Image (cartoon, rainbow, N blue to C red; front, side, top):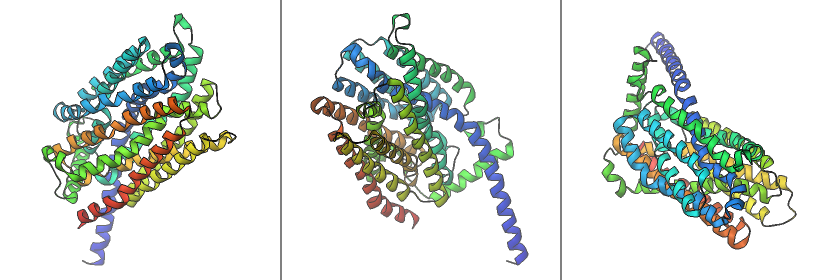
Length: 447
């Protein structure tokens, strides 16, 4: 090739990259803000129970163990209905599936304001999980229809950071509603919390049907040439990844799938423990006001959101997954162990306890979007659709176990510290599994 031809090739490659970047800016601005809004609403409706607990337990005379079981039973609903939901998404499309899910969880959230007995509490938490099942893995699958593997971690990170944004918004919002609305029309503040945060989800579900686009070739907001750019990029990515499992029936006997489940299960033990117990951790550190607790939680989630976006972007830029997962997860585990130590001793300054909590939350959350790059190394087609749901649904049983165990520990000992030590060890195991086993799988994949 002559120098002139090389220069021409360089210019063309640069032009190609510029066009690709422009198309993906358009795609990202169209898809991600709305998906983030939906995930914020889902997260608020899922975890507002952690703030409602601060009043609800006294009103209804529930124990910490009852709360822990109710918080966790949400994930049993997730477990049973997540795989069918993702299979349905692949069959009928994203917008119909997301509409059904979002309207359903909004209605159940509102119904939680009428809870009077533990049985009612358990039932509605189960139904909330059943309705929300399929949303998170459905969006993960949906984004693979639009983004090549080299851009997914950043897209996943941006979408998933909405859970941290929900934490930023949810704390002050819950504190304000529960403080200012307590006693209005004869209802408690925690009841108003469920009603006010459930209504927007119903509205958003209706909007989703008209706003979302199932696949790139259905997008009326893209030009013909832009659709062709996306198709070419996705086809090139598919070829570059090589032959992967397409038959979903092989998933249950695939050791790589069970390795991924074990890794994500260990990470979610930490994430769910923090999610449902952060308000209690803050209160036990010496902060009594519901409004103050909300603002401190918001501050912590700012770092979680930043970590998810920045770590996902850095993983894409460096084309590296293992260490971008293991380092944040390991830091999160060590910070959680430090948090447990501080909660176990009196006289520790609250600022140190809160710093450990922030690092634990940011480290744990930063590893989540990077994890979702791993299934794409092994699965494609229907196996990817069912596999993502299978990995997420089984792993989310950690969300049932961890909050419940912490509730039992808190009831039995009066402290969360022993439970947090256990969760920290489990999270550290997730980092170890990635370092020890994913490297061999990825090297063999690359040749």
